[in-house]
Image: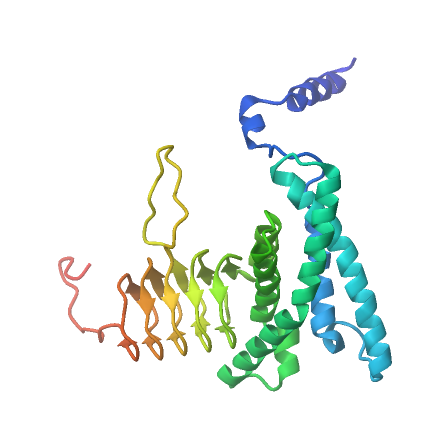
Length: 300
C-alpha cells in the first residue's frame, strides 16, 4: 500500500465508525431520509399547479390547461407520498405497511388543501400589488418577488404541519429561507392578504399569530424574548412569539419580541425594539433626532 492509499484507507476506516455523539443524533426511525431535491420538486409542482400560466407554457384551452394541471397533480401526489413515508419513518420505527398507508392518506389530504392554498396565495399576491407602487402588474409579483416564493413554501409547509407531518415542513421553509433570506417557521399562523416588501432578513417565529392585511418590511423580527427550560435543561415549547392583529404595518428592522399583542390598525416604525403590547390604532415611532456636539466622548 502506497502513502496515499494508506492515508485514504485509514481515514475511511475512522469515518466509517459510528461515535456515541453521532449515534445520539441519528433518528430512531428506519429507511431513507426525506430528499431535499424531491421536496424542491414538490414546491416547483405546487407553483406550476397554482400559477399554471406563469411556470408552464400558457394554455389557452381549458381542456389543455386541465390536462397539464392533472399531470402535475398526479406527479405531485406520487413524489409527496414517497417523501411523506420517508418523513414518517424518520422519527420513529413503525411498520412499513402502516407507514405506506398513512403516507398515502396524508398525501391525498394535502392534495385536498391545494384549492385553499391557492386562494390564500392569490390574496398574498393582491396584497403585495396594493402595497407597492413600483409594481406594474400581478404577473411581475408572481415571477419576481421573493415574498411569493417564501409564501408558497410557507403555505405548503403549514398545511403539512397541520396534518401532523414531521420534519418535512421544516425542510420546506428552510429551503425558502436559503433562497430568499425570509425565515418563516411553518408553525406560525398567518392570515390572508399578507405581504412582505423586499423581505430580506424577515424572521417569523413558530408561535406567531398574524391576522389579515398585515404588511412587514425587510429586517423585521417577530421573535421570542426568552424561554423556559424543563428539568432536563431543554427549552419548553410554549407560545412565546407576538400576536399581530389585522391591518398592522411593521416597518424595516423593527424587532417585536415575546408573547405580546400588536393591536389592529397599528403602525410600528422602523428600528423599533418592542417588548410590550400596544393597543389598537397605535403609532410607535422613534424619538426625533437630537443634535448635539460630540466632544470628549459625549453621546458615545
